[in-house]
Structures are given as structure tokens and as C-alpha cells.
Image 1 (cartoon, helix red, strand yellow):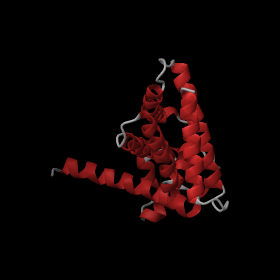
Image 2 (image 1 turned 45 degrees about the horizontal axis):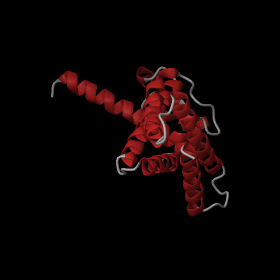
Image 3 (image 1 turned 90 degrees about the vertical axis):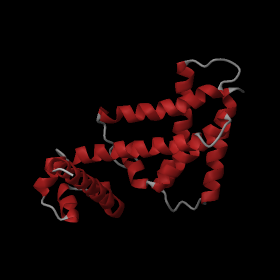
Length: 201
């Protein structure tokens, strides 16, 4: 490996360390506690070195938001590909969405601004568009009696998302609400099924 490649590899490793340190801080103290100084202390670098990789804290948050969407997209595609019928695909994809939210609580909070200010930078538009496209394709196939319009597909996507995101948010904010995982899964699947049935009802 040449010196140029080695330098690039070290830079990539340092960038990953910074992102991992930021996420670790969020897990331990919450996103509000995140600072460039805390990241630097955690990876035993000086703060100015962090600024060589990210202009500010928002740059780190945006990079982690993108990372979250890429993981989520991968998860729902994998869930979709495990089924043949559109109804089963739809359920599996939203269950994967739910599972992502609770496996990656801090990333989900950041991505969707759950009990915090969400990054509003448009640099994640490609990832959010891809997420929509993957789910919209299956929603379109649920319309068996006629061809759906783009407006109808968008409406159903937002109906699914609003209800499921609402359930996720309630559980993330009220982690000790007393509802069991089994009950949450029942509510989740009942909501998904109800929306799916309404498409051709």
C-alpha cells in the first residue's frame, strides 16, 4: 500500500472514530450533551483535529443522519425480499422499520427529531427519497383493482408512516409506559393490516 492510500485509510478511520464517538456520547448522555470537545476527549484527539473533518457539530449530526437512513433502507429492502406477496412485503417492511427504531434509538431520534430538534439540512434528501421509493413501490402493488395515482401512493405512504412513527415516538419517549413488546407488536401489525385492507376496501 502506497503512502497516499495509507493516508486516505487513516483519514477514513479517523472520520469513523469521530462518528462512533458522537453516537456513543448520545447513547450515554443524549444528543443535547454532544460537543466537539467531548468527541475529542473520547478519541483522545485535540478539538482542532475534529474540525479538519467536520466544519461543526451539525456536520457530524448530518453524517450520522445519512448513516441511519442507509441502514434503515438496507433493513427494509432485506425484509421486503423475504416475501412474495405484496401484503406480506408491506408488513415486513414496516416491522423492519419498527425494529430499526428500537435497535438504533439514538439514530432514529436524530433522523426524525424525536424529543429533539431535527437537522433540517437537505443533504439527506437522496436517502429520504430512496426510503420513500422503496416503500412506495410496494404500496403501488397493493392497488389490485386499479392503477393508483402518485397522489394516492403518497397519501398511503404518509398514512402508514404517520401511524407507525407515532407508535415508535410514544414508545421512545415513554420507555416505561407499561406496554409489553408483545402488545406493541400486536398494535403495530393491526395498524399495518388496517391500512393495507383500506387500499382495496
